[in-house]
Image (tube, rainbow, N blue to C red):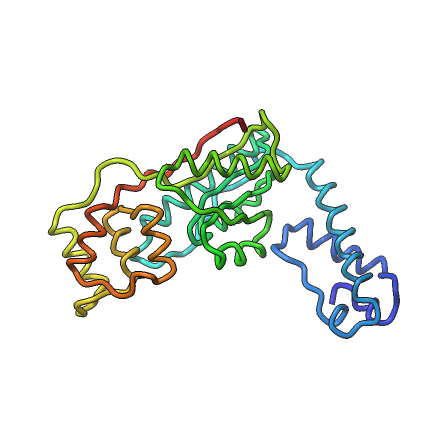
Length: 271
């Protein structure tokens, strides 16, 4: 009840504005109004009051922001994904620290499901996090993550083409200007393709748990066990369940065309 008095009155109290300032100062992911907008007499005024107070505090916090104040964060992870997600955590921490040290204009993240953007956000960097994802579900989820502005973008199998399209979109929407320093966080497909048949069979059997088929979501888990990632086109189909369930032979074909994952943090100037 941030603005409880505005259920009946058109102006907030000083204490209520102070509560909003403190929530923004602590970098909460989101501020929520309930009764004020659901049944209050001044719903639009309440929303505007919160917006003005929050934006004012954000501006003040940005002006006084210190560089390189980020400490590495970690979270408990499920055993099968510990090694993969620990790498993602370290990448997110490094990107946030570099962005603060170099006074980057933005951190641009390319993510399928929003995980990397969320990991970067946990560090609360000073620069805005501009997240690109090919799925509407991930974009909607990221609207509630602190400091993240999500964009919908179809990924190309060529990472450079995807990055160039993202820059074009950001410039056209006035998020960036030519010459701005930007931190790029992405998973790039590189290295060798596929894996030995023995590794494919072992990964399939582990996630299948006795079954002769696995779901599309488990295909991605099996690929991770081999440090592989499918092309963005195949990843998109897997994320939406378009492939249904796969037998071992079908999984082996996907794995044969998958490539090793190379996590990258790049410093680039907006063209």
